[in-house]
Image (cartoon, rainbow, N blue to C red; front, side, top):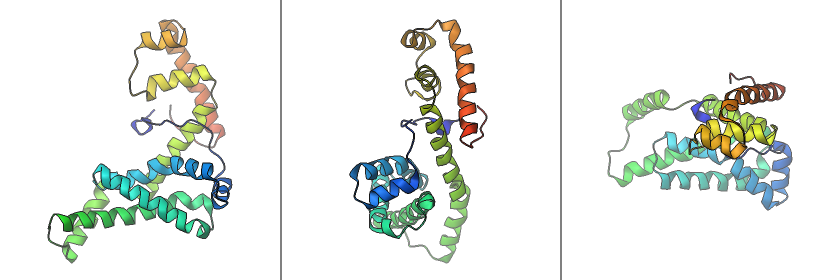
Length: 206
C-alpha cells in the first residue's frame, strides 16, 4: 500500500463512465455530484503540484468543472474524460500561476524565463501519464476494497488508510478479534484484495 492511497475515502463501485456522462447530459444532479466527487482529487492535484495556495486550488477546481459542464455535450469519448480534465486543469493552473506573478509585481516572463520554467516544471511535475496512473491506482483500489467483505475492508482501512492510525488494541476492539489474529487476518485480506484487483485487470504489489 503506497502513500498515494492515503486519504482515499470513497470505496463504492463506480458506475460506468459512459453511463455516468450520459446521465449528466440528461440533467441528473446525482450523477453530476458523483462525477465531481470521482474526479475532484485528480483535478485538484494539478494546481497543488503547481504550488498554488488552497484558495487558488479551489478556484481552479471550480473553473475546471464549470468548463466541463459547458462542454459536456462535446466530449465524444467519455472514457477519455480524465485526460480532458487534466489538460484543462493544467491550462487553468498555469493561468493562475501567471496571475499571481502579476499580482506580486514580479517581472513578466520573457522567452528565457519561460524556457526555464518549462524545464523546472518538467522536473517537479509528473506528466499526464503519471497523474492518470496515480488516479487509476486509487480507482482500482477503491473498487477492490468495495468488493471485500466488511471485516476485511474495515481491517485494511484501519491498518493502511485511517489517518488516525489506530493501535492494534483499538483495531482488535472494534473488530472483536484477538490482537494476535490481526497479522494473519491482514495477510488473508490482502490476498483477497490482490485477487480482486487482478480480476479487475490491475496488477499491484500488496
